[in-house]
Image (tube, rainbow, N blue to C red):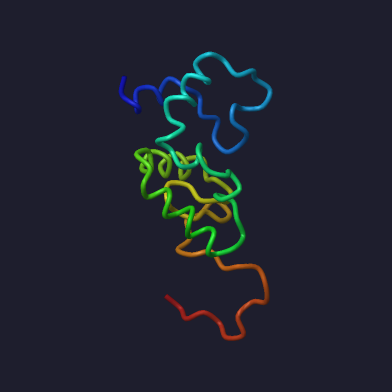
Length: 116
């Protein structure tokens, strides 16, 4: 069975716990996780990596996403759902919008950013 066909049969639930909270893991969920655990970085690494504050860690998550066979579908779904934050499909989302890079916490710039 192709991986994309399998993904179409499983409710991904958007951002949130896996399996989605409030439901019990079904045989399909368990079977899906077993099939993709080694193929999809977000299932085999620490989930906090994709929601980190440090720029270095965020860049590591983006690099892992670029190796994922589902990157394009993940990005499309995140754009459709307007994910509030995190790394989805190799891109950083803040406030439901894709941003080029994530600035770390701290003081704002002293000089305004140049106009695009």
